[in-house]
Amino acid sequence: MSMYKLISSDSHVMEPPNLWTDRIDPEYRDRAPRVVREGGNDQWYADGNIKFGIIGSNTQAGRRFDAPETIVTEGTYEDVRLGGMDPHEHVKDLDIDTVHAGILYPSMGLTVWVIPSTDLLSAIFRAYNDWLADFCAHYPKRLKGIAMINVDSVGDAVNEMRRTKKMGLVGAMIPQRPLFGRYDSPMYEPLWASASELDVPLSIHIGTSRWSPSDIPTHGEGKGLVEFTNQEYHMKDNVAALIYSRVFERHPNLKIGIVEFEISWAPYFLQRMDTVYKERPVRFDGMRFDKNMMPSDFFRQNMFISFQEDALGIELRNHVGVETLVWGSDYPHAESTFPKSREIVDEILNGIPEREKRLIAGENCARLYHIE
Image (cartoon, rainbow, N blue to C red; front, side, top):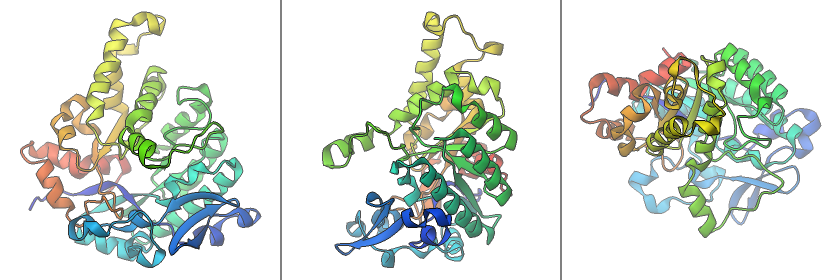
């Protein structure tokens, strides 16, 4: 068995059913997220009848290996793996999986962005962040939480990022599709400046598109499957917007990550950005980066990208930069590598130099989030 330190850059908690009803600001209690038992399954609602978040496959780690036929989309809290809600059980599962530490993202929180109300969303995030900080405080060296911040209001996002940094959370997540503009909009400049100043890595996690007035439901077998297969679509927009708008030139210490989108799409896209930059200068109105930097140089310097089981992406690793790659188990979700993470990572990293194995399996993540 390999001896490198395995750190999951993308693990999850499972929000308990009473999280928001107990913790949200009193003025929002009547609109708070709540669980409703429907047809034998538990369904989350908020602000009246706004539906989000389903229980099933978010909680079924390990079944893909033992009983894949039992994986279901819907389910109840009686079936939730305890490690999603109990930090002591979570650490026990880390030990079973020989994983040293985990960076923790939400589960239901990944879809809560569909709630239109900006002020309610901010209240939901504050309550979640308080709960997550308490969850991680039991094992501060092994459980590292990522705050949710609401970029509908950049000032609110900055304040919450400052607050959660003091609480011990190690990063903050922003939506893959914000409500206002793209991430090249000047309105986000205070966010980049504050994240850089505070040394808070920002993450863009899969499945976090913000509600929009023009949204058309994407549920259903056809459109939903097509959209799921092409999840990196928004990431290409985000990476190009950040790099072309010189965000990283203004904030050279800023770190922004692309989480749970795998790697393989990125090498061609970085090549495409460099090609456009070199061969279509008129489209940039003569703008050139300082120090002869290329777009792909900023990706390698300022961005990180997580993967779970992308062997092809590892083959192409030098095109994105070995130092940008961080592995994640996706525990406790059904597609998680738990409890066979080390076996799976060993196979994917087979044949690459030992130094690169250590970086990809854990050291890059440890450096990013200051994990001992």
